[in-house]
Image (cartoon, rainbow, N blue to C red; front, top):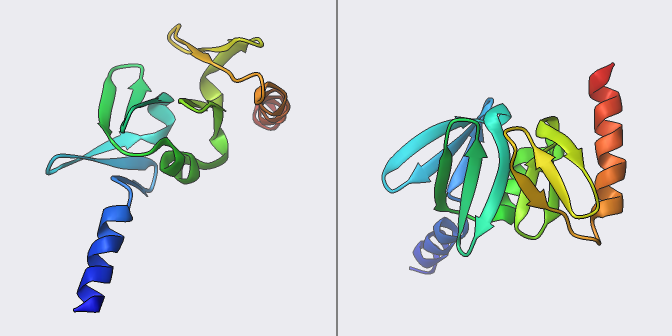
Length: 129
């Protein structure tokens, strides 16, 4: 009986999405939707949901931005508590925001600006070679 309760608790804690090869598998209701990781421009947190912004669509579902931050890895950076950006989709940035591919601008925290600046420069140097 205790094992059954423990297993149920683990199921509730698990993320609604998972990585499979180059895809993020998103659970919306009873459907699983594959979203190519490299197509995600940025992720936005909205209360208890997240919105994946791609060039073609916006996919909103229940998940935590913290879980996505861990899953998506080093190609993404948390610029603000509500935003996670794909470094390959950064067009420009300043102390107030990051302009992304497609024209959207996301907030950047003044506390995370220096870390973003450093990581983005390293990322560009590694990927421009």
